[in-house]
Image (cartoon, rainbow, N blue to C red; front, side, top):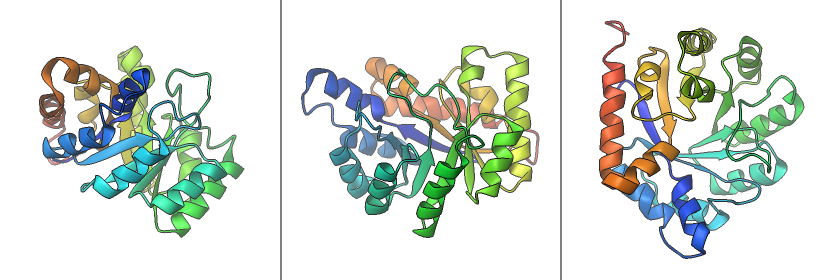
Length: 244
């Protein structure tokens, strides 16, 4: 594929934690996703451990055979955990305990000192770093200045209101990030229905999708949900201009 599909397995852990059981196991979910064709696994270790926990991350690091992307806040605690676990990629995201889910992109401009400190430690250890940001010129340029390899565009606004103007923002953000020499990922709120237009953006090389896929899996099973999502992504890629 011209685009990588990474599956976020956080909400398998959410379901497990709702009853305090050992099942369903997010590590087993990750393995099923890989077997069904996922190019990587994403997991967000939050400060409050509301879904994925430390032991889950350690087991994922041992079990994942494709690529492990660890989402986390730019804090000393999380950097220390990442340096010990050594995921393939760390994606720095904003985080508030009060939020239901990530509400927007990381404010790289306003939190430059903290983000730069985390990036320096992770890059210095040889870990690829991605910043989860809005499709905003100032945030994209600041990300580039910090020396990260990749940004992930926050697609939540587009998914909540899939208007031409919101898609234009994503397209222009992807084009600018690519022109700055950054790899471009995208994620948040994407489903097999709304992913086509995002996958059609030529500069996007990676998608991170979780909640909608786990919801689909309730009805069709996890492997089938991955396959159906992958087919939708491929239909989007097919819309790219010839040669892109």
